[in-house]
Image (cartoon, rainbow, N blue to C red):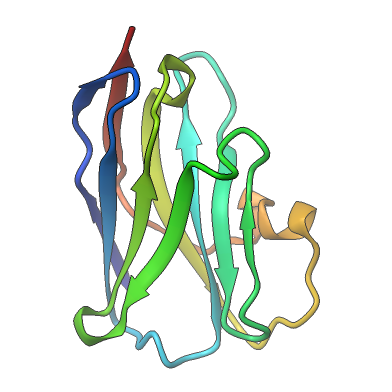
Length: 130
């Protein structure tokens, strides 16, 4: 299993970016939970968005709800994170991660528990300046 993020860049407040996570070694038709996490300098890694194939639910951190959108391009085996109206608080390294299994009815806290995720990408840097 390999996850490769791309799309990070430096933008100004109010700008937009689309992050991609190219997945290999498994199919987006499998049963899994995939999440986007971020880590700002000096802070713990936090969950940003996650999706479970078991029940089709998506979760967003309160800080990004209404601004970030999770989607997937099954033909390319890629998941995307559209980020709009960015602010300096969104600065950090963004990672995608996955764990496998049929997961139904998992709550938001569990979906954002990084310890559950077995495979991680190398991360992509997002910097938002004021």
